Length: 179
View 1 (cartoon, rainbow, N blue to C red):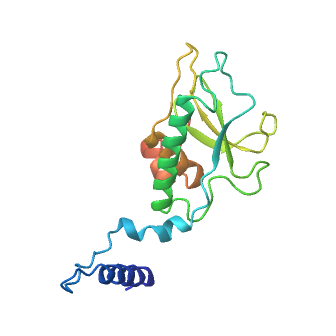
View 2: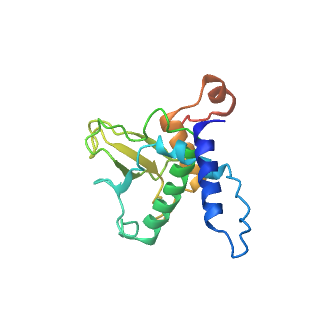
View 3: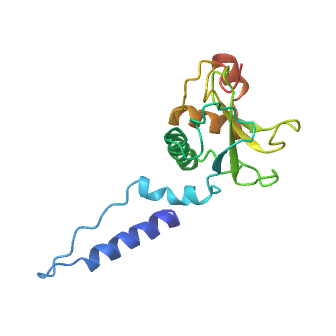
């Protein structure tokens, strides 16, 4: 048995023993669930980056601002996707936002009205956030409609940014290839 499982089982048994009733019958020991075992994997992930709008985020009506409901939904979807990526070990070997970027710990949202997927990448030197990590999506399309990427779309973008698809995946499905 590995150390984490032994420690979790010992804690569960200790807590169960503390919950004895008046007739001295011990409460049944809880069997640790697989979900309870994931903190070891979560501990290997860096803290989730903070989302922010890039300086060149184009929103003429100011409807997708950092304090808007749409941005809050983006943050919630991103947090859930990041947590799943950590639990799956996708971020175990490499952080989503490297420490050598100008604003470590930040991921800047940029809108790309004609894009068709979420992309996470290091911005070019001629952008408003040179060298920083950006999350590109069609947040605001040419017709002015607001869009927020789903948790699943963000999960795929995290996977592609950190791990990437192998040649077989790219050839078979186009995974991680952006148009």
